[in-house]
Image (cartoon, rainbow over all chains, first blue to last red; front, side, top):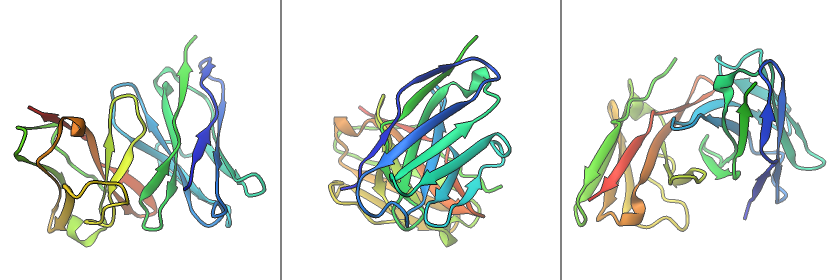
Length: 118
Length: 106
């Protein structure tokens, strides 16, 4: 069974950056895309982007292009999402989720709350 | 960019059948996945590739996809099925989510 464990909650100032980690169990980390999804309070799911760890290739939602960087470390089976120039409306829970093979998000992390406040 | 449209809310009486729709241009040519999200929890995949259930998902969950509408059907929903439901497709190298539907079981 695949498990994704994310780093803890963060409180950040506007204009700063945040980096969240997502550690995967199991031996199939490299071949399956890891996605990042944002959910603002009371709102729906919003895709941020994804990485294919074995290739290092990334795709980003246009909304976050230029402000987000997704990376992966195959040696530790860990994916990272860095978001720069934080604004108050970036306050949200961020989830990592592993692709199941059909562009579905089969396994999800527990979520990381990022609070942006002055 | 591709858009998916879901009703904000659906209500269903115990013992009836709940149907949650997901509209999109030519969605029948795409592969649709569905997620359940209970309050305070991470989403859970309940239907993948239009009509397949992951292990552990009850048989009362099913899916269909044709034309411009995909549908998640929950037969005889239980109180524990009250949750938000999201459809999702892959389009132009992007994951696209519907806006979500809140299911209320009366």
